[in-house]
Length: 219
Image (cartoon, rainbow, N blue to C red):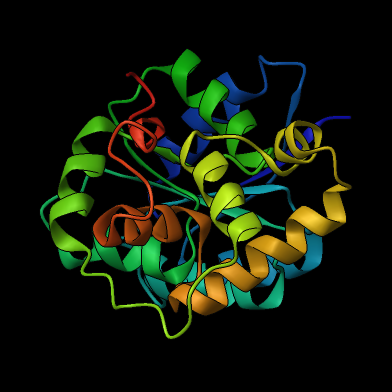
């Protein structure tokens, strides 16, 4: 089944360029393109894409606000920030809003296609630069209650970049149970995304830097 992608960027040349090279991959289908954050939210509600490629600096509604709105309305839709901005509060804001990935616009086409597929499978994807920045910028609060042994196990597998399906296979449980564990982990850590959960866990020492090396997709 094709991965349905929605593009959100206020530059028409960027939108068209992304559409052209993404459609060269038979596993990807560009279902729409938005010129601002508000339009991205509206189109996401109408089209229900698997992945939204979200620019952060857009008129009407910025990409961070649009990401939060889409994640709240459509929890099954993943959002990947695709931007030229790095040294900005928008970097951390995107992850806190629920983005599963943060990529720079100089990402190579083949790598971008691979990362979209990984995001659709529930695997967080960060550029090396964003990974380093977020590790410094995100300040994780202490969890209000401890994770169970199984939740910690799931979190460690998340830190390795495994999808829900991979985790279910590894732990020999059904995928719905994995989703329930992830939901409980996010609630206990007080975060809104899998990416932020792993960053938080590394700050708290629940997983090691080595276990979290998948934060850098080019490790």
